[in-house]
Length: 499
Picture: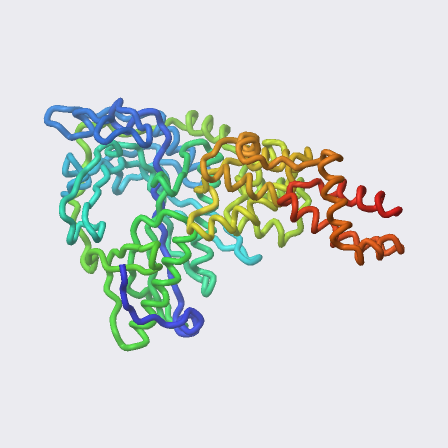
């Protein structure tokens, strides 16, 4: 999609305006069944095979609350520092859309299960306090696919709907306005979503796979003139599904809104769509007036009233707080503050941690995830965790290096094979014939040919200039396509030349 929009440079925009953000994060819970029925929640099942009269909204069907989902909601609220409501209930949020088979969404309105929490995030050495307004329970919608050139409903040839996702338990976590971040606003938003993802993963309540939609963010932003206190009109960029995109979408919106305001125009309060391929947002639907969803209490569900004893029991099951967890890893791994900050900035903490747990060193895990694999993720414009390689496989690659089976250069080819779906690191080495050659007969013959082809270099080495051996080692490695044991090659060269 090609869109031409006037943009102000980011630096100029921040000289004139102060951004105010609000983030709404939707989390699909990993319960075995849906929020109000017994249908399974497995991702990737054939379309419309995980449905029943309840999640299809057929007449006469009655919902039943998923107890595990309520438990997960309470644990999320506690981990966010929220107050847990002693009594709350569900409501019907009425609106029509093809992927809502009931014509209403069962959600929570004025009585959410968790309120008033806080998350602290660190960006460039500064601590930013993100206040949580509410975390409430609801159900997900189905998934519409619009078939045609645009891929969107406008201009589509036809649309198809998969209701497998309809009814999957959702927790929506809504922040209060985030002020005072200034030029770091998009980075603060990214850091918040990243920390939320790590927290939810540690709680074990969701797989938080952003590329699969089990964690997605609606990013709101408005601008006000520097020195002013009144909020400007905001836009809401819907369903942003990667950390990188959260930062990019907010940066784009700040530059777009700044150009409009500086030119004397007015920002339209609306939803917007983020386009990962072109890095722009486009208009969705107007939200200049509040929508009337005609909320009313769900008559088919009893209120939720968690006891104090149950809440305290769940509080005792919480994992280590994120800040304490990061501090423990920082001290255990021995990185500098800058090195550790790079891991956090890349959203790779859990990947490095899992790779270390799989048997490699922190330094090796960091090297692969922030080096070779970060480059692959950037080239393919995906998040690190979306790459088709697991921490255990990365540890396996390093194990092959440690054993001398491959060197670092060959290890990159092993990673190529794993990413291409050719199997485990060991299987890739066998299939591609990547093992390092350390057999003296093969290496010796190659060394002899290198000496014969480079008599001047050989003479320097005989004369005591051992450093010149690097040229012969390079020649041998080139002949053997990088698969020679460089250390053994050096030993053989020096032996043959009397050194």
